[in-house]
Image (cartoon, rainbow, N blue to C red):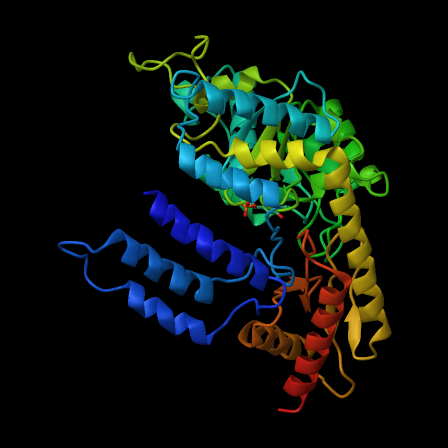
Length: 465
Ligand SMILES: *Cc1c(COP(=O)(O)O)cnc(C)c1O
């Protein structure tokens, strides 16, 4: 077995060293994928040969999303301590289900959740759950909100569902993320349950409209979703104002801070999340700006008991119940058996501390400003929004091009086809735009310069065709 692990270790050095220079995607290498398919083997093969084949294809065809020039979506890298701890998690193969299945994993998760609360300046009385993603964190938090809301109507939704209830009112700005809608979809409310209160095409919140909508509920309780870090520009809803409305109208306040919650780490941006401590629940990701491996989301909940109420599994005689000292995190989140995803979180926070993670966030804030300045200085590039955080929303607008949306769609496709750097297109305020996000510890100023060079080169190429 250790020989097989040795094969992985031997591949790791050259692969990690290649990250700084290799393209984000080698299109030719994708042809190798065919060598992994075929019928299910009857007899199997030498494990050493199998692992060799997997590594050969993987190290060539892998998308370099942990490298420094992947600016698509919001995709963090992996710190060295987090990567090593993730290997340890695979080695130890713990089931972080309960204190019985792994006292070790349970304890590390408890410490990791406590450190995350501290990192974001939240009180120790808050609870939480480590989950697979921010989508699942939104699901977990809105699951607690659903249970709370059912309780206001005298219904235990965990036991009896939603059938006897009216539709749960959910209000947000136009910044609401599709994964929050997906969470509502999975919880049985439907993704269309969100009433969007926006005052412009970018989706900025219309507080007066939200107030009128809340008044029209005539005392019925609802849920307000505040968005901390909108995916096109990194902009924020005014959380404190939404907290005020939630308080006034008896609503649950949920904050989707998948990456934006990390604004709390720097005094330069902490004002953007002012009021987040007044939320009832918060969803965020570790695999974005904490730079730990996938799958690492977390939900933080003001009243931890609500997690057990919404996600407990009473009635299985062979499992510990919610109040049982042997119980664990499986009873406070959507998953039952789960890997020890706390290990990389614990390790990166232990290794680099609050200081190290603040420095990483601030480096990315600086790089985003640098990118914005390069965009502003390029005559054929046009920035579409301010840069409060780590995302720069811009488009190419060369003189003479009339259909800029079509042009930028083709530019976005050319970027992915080229593969040296990655960034994605979006529709922002009615315009097709690029929205590179900078959240990888490996990214340097030179990578940003190179990104702009490639964008300008490809814009000229698209324009010439
Ligand atoms: C990325 C993101 C999500 C979803 O996160 P996953 O980890 O991909 O599930 C939710 N909300 C916001 C604001 C995001 O940026």
